[in-house]
Amino acid sequence: MFTNELKDLLAGLYQKYGCTQEVLQLSNIIDEIIVKEQRERLKEYYKSRKNNI
Image 1 (spheres, rainbow, N blue to C red):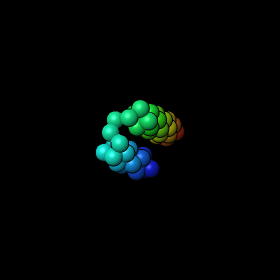
Image 2: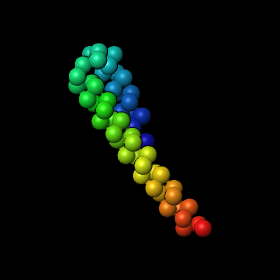
Image 3: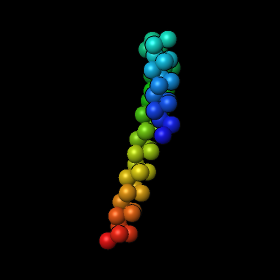
Image 4: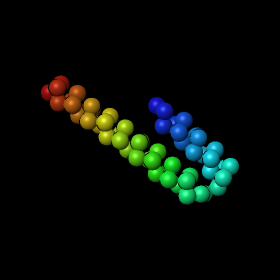
């Protein structure tokens, strides 16, 4: 999953530049990506369970 790499990149930016507005915005975008991926995985999980019933 590429989100771990994004989190590592964000951590590096935070260490280098501190808590700037751009770093905060990037953090929010990464959080949105993670939530979207989790929703998709949950949909697939429930879809597979429904097909197995």
